[in-house]
Length: 183
Image (cartoon, rainbow, N blue to C red):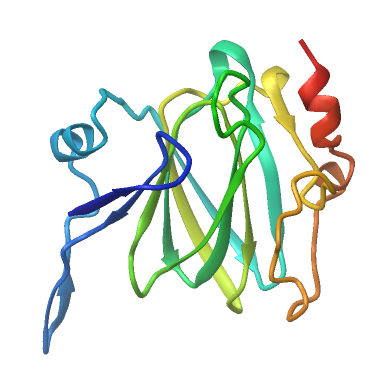
């Protein structure tokens, strides 16, 4: 597995070694020891989430607050997405910065997102199945979010080519400015 840290400290792109032949392919999608050694910290995942989204579905930007914050390992099982993370760690040198990258079922790259980040994605293919491992359980009362189209964040979503579909809940999320000044 090739592991590369991104411009946002603690976020890593993981690229598996794929063994292909005329029968198909094989790769190890997760190995606890190799993963922890590669990112330099102990992470224990306790929950897997699996979503199916149609083209143009935008989910996010979501996060869990406080002691319920979650680190995530995101994989695309089928299709292609634009995956976006925003650094919400107020003591971080990259606070308020974001990373945007395509993940797909062809290259099988994964993105590790540490605690303290908002996460969202846009489905670029006709449909996409996304699997993400979480190191903490979901707790409804501690969920938070920031609008995907926040002016201050200026995320360049690839929305010109798709008809956007956003949940009512996500359309009501607050701005990054509101998040910035919450204690």
